[in-house]
Amino acid sequence: MISEQSYLSYFTPRQMSHELLEAILVKQGDLIQRLVDKTRQSVMTQAKYHTLLLGPRGIGKSYITALTYHRVKALPELEGKIAIAFLAEEEWSVASLTDLLLVILKALEQEYGDLQTRIDALYRLPINEIEATANALIREYVGERTLFILIENLNEIFRGLESDGQWALRSFLSEHPFATLLATTQSLFAGVTKRDSAFYGFFQHSPRGVSEDPYSAGARSSRA
Amino acid sequence: MRMQKANPGGTLAPDEVVGRDELVEQLWRRLERQSLYITAERRMGKSSVVRDKMGSTIPAGWTFLYLDVSNAVTPLEFVEVLLGASRQSLSAATVGKFNFLQIASKLAGLQITAPLGFKLPDTLKVQWKTLLTELLQDLENLGGVVVLAFDELPLMLDAIQRREGAAVVMEILDTLRAVRQMNSPLRMIYTGSLGIHHILSVLREQGYQNEPINDMYTVNLEPLTEAHATELVLRLLYGESVSCDNYDAIALHIAQETDRIPFYIQHVVAELGVAGAIATQERVNDYLHESLNDGLDRWNLVYYDERIDTHYLLAHRQIARATLDMLATQPPKTVDEITEGIDPARIERDRETVLRVLRLLGSDHYTTVEEGRYRFRSAFIQRVWRSRRGLGE
Ligand SMILES: Nc1ncnc2c1ncn2[C@@H]1O[C@H](COP(=O)(O)OP(=O)(O)OP(=O)(O)O)[C@@H](O)[C@H]1O
Ligand SMILES: [Mg+2]
Image (cartoon, rainbow over all chains, first blue to last red):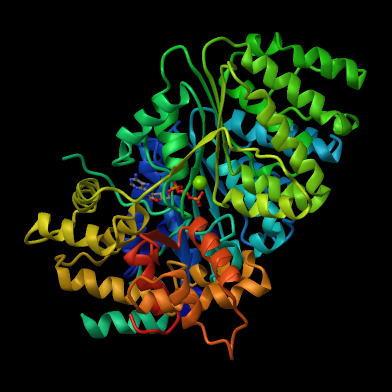
């Protein structure tokens, strides 16, 4: 567990520098190394990993996400092989796959700064053509690379997507697997747990010790 | 021994999909003559087999298109997904020659060329059947055997049924069935996370009499063999750098305790990898016990129970639960024993309804029948059922 949790929660880790994040790294090193490793595997091989970090607000999920982002970005071997879309923390506006694809494009533009004109062009299309075109644009832009999507508060996004949107997202991710996901959530939610839900059993959860559930963490340490 | 990292739920590289080579060879041979319906419990590995294994071993001269159709919710979108997959897998020149484009252009009154990310105009909505038939015809004419693998087809049909009614779904199934007639080089694979029997039973209630999959060979995707399950555990133990005193013994133990279901094997070894301690049989048992009783239910096990509310008629739910409760704690039983075992003072039941429910439970992979006696198909799922239903583990 992160001991400075109350301290950390006052900051937006995403806005901290790489150095500062490294400096306040306490005990999450193992987990972050695993996440970096999985991302590397997803880029270097055909396998694609999807992880969900589960825990209440203020526990350090954003911190872990931000540091993973920096570490992955700093890996020289992944250069030219990865496209990173780090979604803004509060994307409450997502109500369909179309919205989510636009948010992903926005994040890619933020990261690489060469997509704005093409994004603007999307908004001029008839509504019902945006999804297919945005989908094709993402695939074309990513090309042979692997898309690394970081999403905070996936529960909010899933709420907006509803069942059909979630299935559409799963289809987008798994028809031609080209993306790896690192997501955070404050609670497990229907989209991930219901057997009929698209993402049933889709994610590997953050490991028990850091899954921020006081009960299971306690049970584990008393056993050890 | 090849090493691989634990990846429960993600996409595997084709050579990380363990123990399916022989099956895939059989499937290719079967496809020479016949189409396939592949069914299994959720997360058993259907997509891994079809998309990853078959997708990487396509016989020379064959065409194989893999489509995840779960994002299509209208028949026209289904046509679009099929067109999109054709564009992805075939050359632009090949698709450019499709008759489909001419027909679609004529019907729409504008030039249609199908670039990537293409959307058919809404005006073509009512013409979906003509368009689907044309497109299938073009694919049939590619030469060689052409396999269309529709992942999540039942789910798409369910979505269309809810939006546009059962009649449209009947037409889609019949259209697909019709092009698979004798001598066609076109083969199809239907599969997905929702069993097609749930769709067919809705259609039957609406008077549907056709047999839309009776020409297909049904494949029940089973867990791995013990040897393959053990191999998977070993690969993962090495890949996750888990140390143990006796690798073979631990591998066999995990394989047996998970009933050789690869998804749960992946989960158990992932946990061992994170824990970092030496893996022993006791530790494995502890993990399983904890996961089966996890307050957060990270393995989502409660949904073996909840699914019954989603898909079973009100009148069937109590019988289904009572039956599974009984089979979870007692030896295999006959229909009569099961019927007798349900307390009529609590649950209205008769032999016919119990039989119908047993058929559903079988199609949903809970139970199997041997010499007239029903039991859980998997001891692991049986154990899950007991723990989730408070019947002791
Ligand atoms: N043969 C295998 N070898 C190793 N791991 C496997 C194998 N089959 C399945 N798995 C594991 O199970 C997970 C689920 O597999 P897959 O997505 O193929 O299942 P599915 O049956 O298509 O699921 P759904 O019903 O949700 O569509 C994979 O992420 C992987 O961890
Ligand atoms: Mg699948």
